[in-house]
Length: 97
Image 1 (cartoon, rainbow, N blue to C red):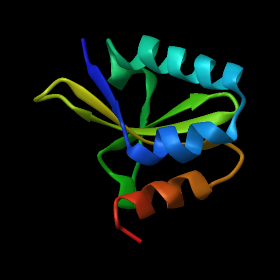
Image 2 (cartoon, rainbow, N blue to C red):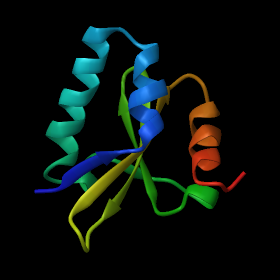
Image 3 (spheres, rainbow, N blue to C red):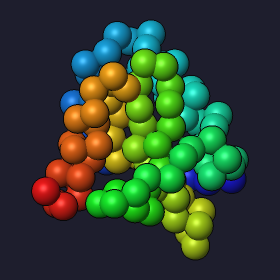
Image 4 (cartoon, one colour):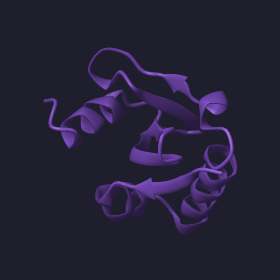
């Protein structure tokens, strides 16, 4: 079982922008999918975000990284799927931009 941790801005900024019912739905899906087999549900990202994965939770995108050595999943960014800025914001949080 994987331990899920969140970037401090995920809980402070990303989730505050959505309704409470959406927050609960997103967190429930993350716990269900990423706790047991995070590689299966996500798709690997490329270029600057290589090593990270994306998970689609309509209408949102979740950017996360798997640390198999410590059995951890780190959620970096949650944002609207229709907006490609989710990847730019994720790269900014890593200091790549």
